[in-house]
Amino acid sequence: MDSSTIVILDFGAQYTQLIARRVREFNVFSVVLPCTASLESIRAQNPIGIILSGGPSSVYDADAPKADAAVLKLGLPTLGICYGMQFMAHHLGGKVTPADKREYGDAVVDVKKSNKLFAGLPAKLDVWMSHGDSVVELPAGFVIAGETHNAISSIADEKRNMYAVQWHPEVAHSKQGTELLKNFVLNICGAKADWTPAHFITSTVEAIKKQVGDGHAICALSGGVDSAVAAVLVSRAIGDRLTCIFVNNGVLRKNEFEQVQNNMRKKLGLKVVAVDASKRFLSQLGGITDPETKRKIIGREFITVFDDEAARILADQEKHGELQHDAAGNEIAWLVQGTLYPDVIESSSVKGPSQTIKSHHNVGGLPENMKLKLIEPLRDLFKDEVRRVGRDLGMPEEVLERQPFPGPGLAVRIVGEITPERVEILQNADDIVVSEIKKAGLYKQIWQSFAVLLPVKSVGVMGDQRTYAYTCAVRAVHSDDGMTADWVPLPYEVLKTISSRIVNEVRGINRVVYDITSKPPGTIEWE
Image 1 (cartoon, rainbow, N blue to C red):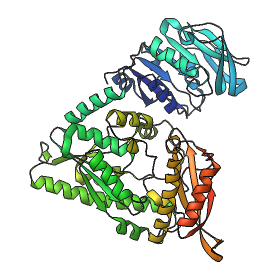
Image 2 (cartoon, rainbow, N blue to C red; image 1 turned 120 degrees about the vertical axis):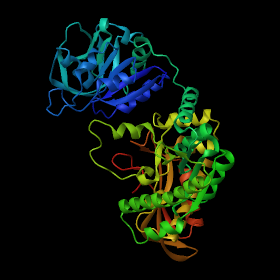
Image 3 (tube, rainbow, N blue to C red; image 1 turned 90 degrees about the vertical axis):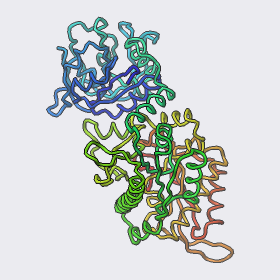
C-alpha cells in the first residue's frame, strides 16, 4: 500500500467498522486488524498511526482480549477509544477500576486542557458514552484533557503523541466526533488524503496484471454491484481472458436473467456465459419449507453448476493451449469473487459473531481440485466505496444503484414451499413494488424494497365473487450497511398504488400488508 495507512486494532467493539469508515471519509486508507495481531503484522502495514477500538471487556477480565502491549511502544501516534483508553492507561502504568457511576448514552465533556486532538473544538463536547470502567490514575507523562461530572473522559501525552477518549467519536451521536478524528488522522498523524477511487483503480489493475500474468480468470456474476464491479476491474486488467458465469437459479426476479446478460455484455463489455439451471434448482427445492435448508440447497446446487461450467471452460482453454501452468505442470486459473471489507473484518474479528443468524451462499466452497486461485479486488472496500469505484470505471447507474439482492434470491422471500407457480406470483408482485418505488423517485433513497409471498390465504371479493388467495407483504428499509435497518414510511399514495396494482394484476394475491419492523428485532429479509 503506497498511501498513508491508519491501523485500527479491534478489541471486539460493535463500532470498529465505523471507525474505519470515518477514517476513509478523509480519503485516508484504514485497515482493521484483530487486537491479537502480532507486531510484525502491524508493522507490515507501514502505518502512520494506530487507533485502539472500544470493546465489551474490562482490562482486568480473565478473557479480556490479549493484545501485545508493546504496540504502545512503536513510537507511532496513538488514539485510544473507550476500552482503548483503558487499555492504554492500564498498560502504561495507570489504574482502571469499575466506575461508581457507569455512563451510557449522551454526555457532556468539559475540555480541561486543549491539545492537538481538540484543536478547533468547543470547550464543551456533546458525546456518546458506553462504559462501566473508568481511569482513576494516570500513567506517567499523561494529563487529564477532559472530564464529565462522573469520570476522567480524556487523557493525553503530547510528547509521545498519545491520546485517548472515553467516548465514541465515530458515532453520529458524538457531534464533534468527525472533527476530532480528522484532527488525529490528518494533523497528528500527518496522513495524506490520497485514498481515492482513481488511485484504487490504478493500483488494483496493476496488481491484478502482476498476479494473473498471462493466466485466465472466471467470475461468478450475480448481476449485483459487487460482482459487477469486481468483474469490470479484472476485465480492465486482463481483457477477454476473463469469463463470467451467470446462473439462473430459478428464483431470480422478473426478466432478470435477460436483463443481467444485456447489462453485462452490452453495457459493460464483459464475456458472459449464461446458464439456465432453473428447472434443476426448482426440482431440488420442491417440498422444502425450512429457510436454512433452502439456502443450503441453493448454495450447494450453485457450486455444482458453477463447477460444471468452470471445468468445461478450463478444459476448452486447455485444449487450445491457453492455460498457464506452474512449475509442476499444473494448470492455473483464477476465480474472481466480490468479497467486501466487512466480510474480511467479520471473519477475523476478536470474538466473532456469537450466533449464525442465517448462512450465506459463497462460491468459496468450490472444489479444490479445480486449481482455482482467488482474486478478491474489492476486499479492502466498503459498499459505498465499491459504488464510487464503479462510477470512476464509467459503469452505468442502473447497475451501481441496484439494491442488494440475497444470494438465494426469491427463495427467501417465498415463505414456505417453493413452486414454479409461487415464484411467478412473487416475481410479478415484486416487479410492481420496485417499479412503483422507482416511479415515485424513491428507489435510490432506499436500501432495499421488495415483496414477500406469505403462505397465508384469506377471503376476498373480486367482481362480486369470493376469492381465497395469498397475502403479499411489502418491505422497504433504510440502512447504511445492512447490519441495522429502519422501516421506510412510504407515502400513502405509493402504498395505495402498489396495493391496488398487485391485487388487480397479480393472480393469486388478494391482500397486501406493509411490514413496519426494524432490524433489530427483525431482519431485513423474512427468511
